[in-house]
Structure formats: structure tokens, C-alpha cells
Image: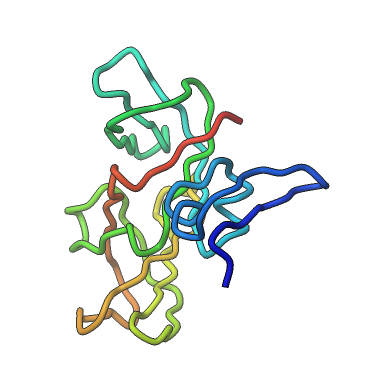
Length: 152
């Protein structure tokens, strides 16, 4: 096994690092999507507030306060399924419907169809013995510390 990896896109190096660095802190949206599962969301970062805010959907007014934002304006946000937290309907940042689920060893992945049509389907990894809804209404929260943003 290698200590360091290089991720290439069209013959250009996108990122060099340890497997953990590349998975946890992908340098670009391409790397985030290429290495492991991720949710890619269009948004806008407003650096006029402190901390900076990521606005995901105008329709539902979904915002995430970021600890740091390396860019502002139109962005692509990335968050891994294990960093999306399941919540009761009406109590999270994004409401939606469970439309699919698949067993993945130590966790079960749920596919959530957000009620806000401007958002794509979300993958949520539910760990261990947490109750997994077979279908129905749920809400999700995004772990702000695990959201990476990239300029469009």
C-alpha cells in the first residue's frame, strides 16, 4: 500500500497526499467525487458575515455556517455521506423522503429526495445500530466542519 497518492484529471495532477488527506480534505470537487462517495451541492458563499455562510437553496433557505471559506461567490460544496446527520422531519436543515437504501457493512446508506427541488438527491450513511427508516419522511443536517467548498 502506498503512503501517498496522486489524483490526476486529464493528465494534470489535482492533488497529492496520503489517502486520509485526500479523502478528508479533497483539493477540488473532482477529487471529492473521484475518491469515495460524496454529495455535491451548488451554493453561494457569503463572506460578508462571520463566520462565512454557505447558502444552498433559495427555495428552502438552507444555510450552513462555515468555520472558514477559502472562496466566495458561486461554489460547489462537498460533504461525505457519513457527515450528513439524520434528524426527525421538520427539525433538520433539509426535509426529504427516503427513496432507497442499501446495506454497506458497518452502515446503511439512505438516498434522500429533498423536498426542495433545487437540491439533488442526498446520500446519508447511518452508522451501526441506529434505527434506519425503510421509507418515509426524514430531515438531515450537514456537519459544517466536514463541508468543503470549491470555486465554480
